Image (tube, rainbow, N blue to C red; front, side, top):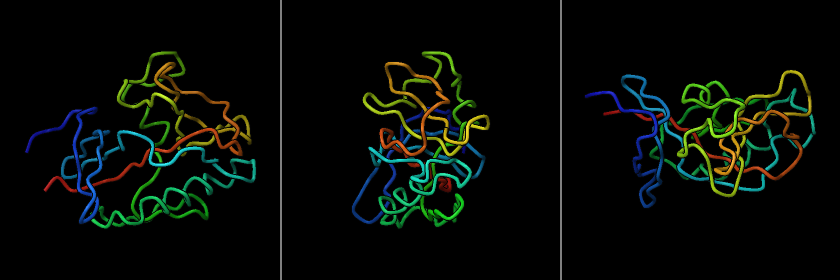
Length: 165
C-alpha cells in the first residue's frame, strides 16, 4: 500500500446506502484523513454564544446531526468543548496550512474550497474572542481570521479518519 497524495478524490460508502465524495487531506500510513468534497451543512454558526472560548459547540452539534448516520465511519469522540461529534469533525487551521493555505488570496488548493461558501475550521482566533478561522470560497481561496463565531454565514465540511485496509 503506497502513499496517497493530499487532494486525491475518493468516494467512500459512509453507510449501507450512501456514498460520499471526499478528498484526501493526509495519509497517516495505516489511515487516511479525508475531508468532504463539499459542505455537509451550510448557514451554521461556529458558536451561538458569540465567544470562541467555548469551542465550536454549535457547529459541532450540527456536524454530528448531519453525519450520525455515517455508520461505516469509525466512531471517534471529538470533544469541541461540550459539542461532541462521533463520526466527523471540522478541519483545523494547521491542517489547512499543511496543504498550502495561508492568509494570502489563492493560497488554498481549489479542492479545499467551495464555490459558494466559506467553511469553518475548529481553530479559534487567539487575538479576538469573537473570531474563528475559516477557509474562504473558491473566489478567494485563503484563510481568513476575522469571522464572527455567532454569524451563520459559513458552511462545514466533514473531516473523517478511515483505515486504509
